Amino acid sequence: MMLTATAQTGTASLHRALRIAGWIGLGLIAVAVSLSDFLANAPANATAIGPLLAPPSVEFRFGTDILGRDLFSETLHALNATARSILPATAVTLLAGALLGFVAARLPRSLALTVRGLVGILASLPALLLAVLAIGLSTRDWAAVAAGLSAAPFTFVRAFDRARLEERATHSEYARATGISAATLLRRDLVYEFSDTILSSAARALAAVTLILSTVSFLGFGAVPPHRDLGLMIAAARPYFLHAWWTAAFPAAALVLLILCARLAAGLDEGERA
Amino acid sequence: MLRFVSREAGKLALSLAGAVLLAAAISALAAPDAGGGAWQFLVAWGRALDGYAHLDFGHSAMTGRAASDELARHLPLTLGLVFEGLAIALIVGIPIGLSFGSGPARRAAAPLIQILSAAPIFCAGLALAFVAGNLLHWPVPSGDATAGLALVPHDVREAEILLLPVLTVGLAGAAATQLSLRRAGAEIAGQPWRTQLRRMGLSAWEIETVYAMPRIFAGLLGDLGEVMLALFSAAAVAEWVFNYAGAADLFVKSVALRDWAVVAPVLLAFGVLTMIAGFTGRCLAFPLLATGAES
Image (cartoon, rainbow over all chains, first blue to last red; front, side, top):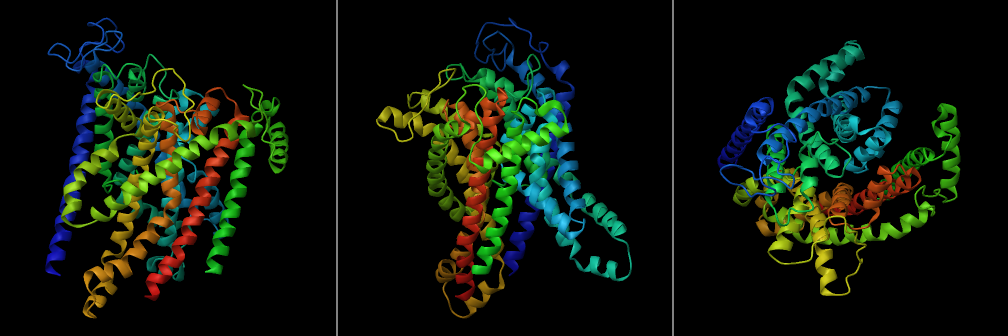
């Protein structure tokens, strides 16, 4: 029993440490993004900076691509473009998913279950295809909103189910019995819910929309050239990455690092879907 | 059991009806007058619904062929990819989920699994292609060359080409499988019946195999819809990366060309398959949970 308790305490400390590490990582990425114009050796999309497809060297730390662009600078600029689109997408997911899901659960029972069923249909479709469809229905300028909306059904369902549990909790029964209005109870539960989980939900949404946005960009539905994000940069490297690995490897590493930090900050279990 | 299955079947029927409504709404966009206002759209939606009721999904704006024919040409390739991927997901995911589910093995594997989980599927696909092309010297379909790959390979070369997308999809499925198993394992880890059974003199092996395993596998079956969702998402990316002319690739190209009559049935097919997988998994999990409770 003692050993189990010690192991649980150890696991909890490790989780806390990893979450802090995730937030520090995200903070460092934010600093790199905001200073990208100073840190980069060349402006975005500046061609013929070096020889074509030069491997990583002292002069070009990440090598160059087929147009002679400095990949270190390009990766920084692309990270900047990715970060600028994932922030609004995260906000959309939190509003349309977490907040609406929580509020929808407090609607009259039949209406709430109908809404849950409708959103459940969207949740049974791959979020990636939903994002592609939403962008197809609008324009690529709305890719961030589309990615946020496509990640929202899953978040909505999670928030809805959690809110239904809250509604059946003892404090809710006491509140109703003492005549506290449904609106006051909803406000109280929203405050507690979001003050407890807002950071973790935001980081979870950040990881999800980064995955979706980079993938739609890779498929050609996201960033519009010449404004390249990491997904588009990797897609552009596709024809020659077999012979020039660095053209895809460094942007991919930056993307994995961003998603890893967001996952750690969210406290996601290994393998858990964002 | 019958009551449970009936309730689940009712939920499935409602979800399927909703999916058909959604697909018909997308298909209605293909009508030339659908953009003329709300009323015109509703009329087009009604016409599309009527067509769906008669299994007429409309015609592709690009090829002129019936959307159902396009689906029939491309969907088997995706299903082959998904089911071959599912086999790999189970072969790889179940041992990983059971071995690394708890204890020191989990702690040792955790950092690696975290990093692997953070990699988008297209990065994993490109990494596999790089290893296959440069280290194993396999042929890697890339660039603009389209390859309508065979569902069942006829020779070694075809098998080598097919293996890369199947591996990509399988590894994504394996991640979902192991997670589901570990989640189920974690749920029953602290259950009081474990201690009680130990006090009754049962060995740890007996408790695990007779009482815990049915519940863990019931958890996996209950999450079958989620595993299928992971497989379909991975298939969409793998088909794009490896120029595999399946239904997901057709979906992406049709959205790019705004060929809504083709987009709608493809999306409907994916939704229906995921819903049916979820329903089947939940129905299969129910007796397993009941067996665990009885024993």
